[in-house]
Image (cartoon, rainbow, N blue to C red; front, side):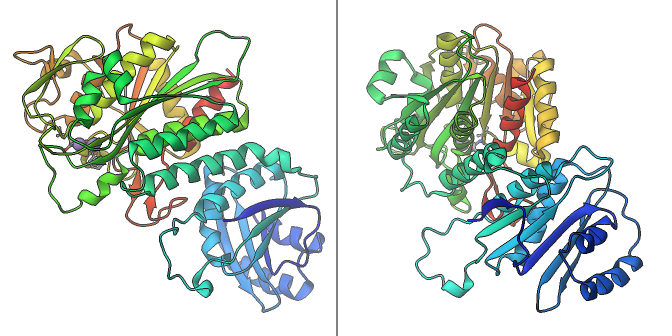
Length: 493
Ligand code: BES
Ligand code: MN
Ligand code: ZN
């Protein structure tokens, strides 16, 4: 794990990373006394051969003269925050074998980026790209481990550790989401998970756990129908963050799918690849981590998180295809496919949080459908909403955070497809067409007061099979950066 620090001086670092606009990086290096004359001359002849860069951020050159490793980064005028994060992610593999590195950052003339902005974005990039999940390895050799411990940002204007606090909290939250999602299902049962969430009370969050007996009493029958085949009892965890004491109402409710393992139940999945379904709780990990980040960042918002933690297993007590249950909302549901379980878990949670907290808006996040992977692959998550304003705010946060969303339609034609012959709704539509949209229509049916609501289908984004920008192989924590941006935009509105 990389520690980010700040200082005015760090000339003794072997790795020197210079960041500035265009060729300025080089002048900055010499006038700032960061590189010596001979390095300057060598770099200069190299830079002269380079074409002007169109924009963006670019690592121009890694120059190793045994005394030092100089990495020169030229940044274009239309650079974005995400470009700077990704830039750090690209540099990381080149410097991870050294114990420390210094980044010489300065305000980028003609852009809005200050040295502090560069530190915040590149710091986040280093922290996220250096993540690894290796707690279950007992055989990694020390020499094969990354050695990078600190990245020190050196700037003329004094940067204080507290100027980086919110970014540190965010990086921490993303790592927490990845850790939870990477855990195998035997090590993260609903009970273990619930106990882990309870520990967040240390941060000033209020955490309420609802156990199986209470869930029965309250009538979470759809959620219970998913867990009833498993020996691991279900939990619902509610996290309350009250950051705006002057305000009574809840700004946002976040709802997460926490299926700790999805075998498909009686409608069992094929064995090949079933192991990926340990990550079917990724949405809940994003919700829990977002609450954690909000508390650490002391956002002036009131946020409620609710996650349904269940294991979906086949057994003699499991739900049968064709069973009908009465949901918490009172609507009856014909369960035709026990593998369409996420919507059953979320539906009751949505009804509950809307009824009990009357939030101004509800956002659910879930690895809900394989169909969204067919539609969007590993580039974007699906967005479904009954509200254009909320939808727009989320799309903007998506662009700003680099965790992008693509909106799908919700219309009566699709809503009709989940009407059941013998109950109010059924949990799948016929055939495979528009599977992600009909899943969203199912969720929408469990809102009773037409609260502005959005559903984010992150199947396909929750984990990557190979490293990708700020994400390594495995769990991504996708959604934490997005929701944090959304919340911080909402805070200043
Ligand atoms: N958890 C899966 C969706 C999923 C698929 C997540 C691939 C990540 C990667 C969900 O519970 C599921 O099984 N959905 C079914 C729905 C179908 C039975 C209507 C699917 O998509 O096949
Ligand atoms: Mn399923
Ligand atoms: Zn699932």
